[in-house]
Length: 149
Length: 117
Image 1 (cartoon, each protein chain N blue to C red):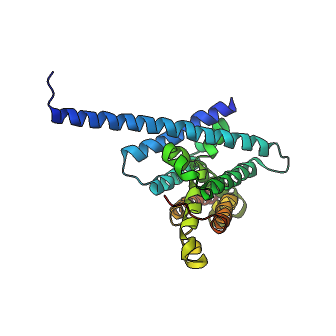
Image 2: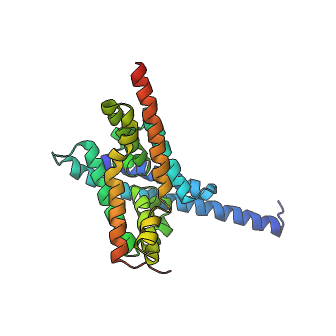
Image 3: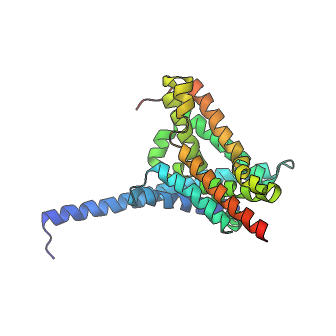
């Protein structure tokens, strides 16, 4: 089979793009998986605390992961790791925290109220807006079912 | 065993997110938002609860778990307070995480300086 140099270029481009996607996906897999292992260790720890319900233990894990993410973001460590891990550090709750903290760091120079205060949820805001809107709709549906039943 | 499940399932959820980044034009903000809404819908459909019992932190640490917490909070609040619960439940259940993000972000912004590339 003969292939021209233009075809060859497109083939190389396509395969290198595919192999880049494969590598990115693998990196996201193991880095995200490791963060979840850390989460599981924390969950076991908080589940063993008698005064916490399981739901509260889940919330406590979130608080600790958000703290760790804030420290890593503040120290400038999150960005280089995220560049490598991609969705592996975006999809865990640490990615949500990173979005809030990095907006805080970035806009601090524009003032405590007009910078930090207003722009803290520049990136993460939609998560809360549409997440709570969706949960409200679910709540109304539940209430209707409960009322009719 | 629970650690292996957390690794495999949490990792797979992140890998799916990476495929969305690489194969579609969705921005990270849209992907995070989509994951949370999907988490609410899956919980409402009765699918995510059993998944959490199975996968543990593999299901609660990814942002899908934030949607799960929102929906679970609403379930409990509607049970207790009726229609008012639809307004209350989501924030009640996620209040610790949201407050932590705000408090630690403000603290970090006051302590650290932004790193320049």
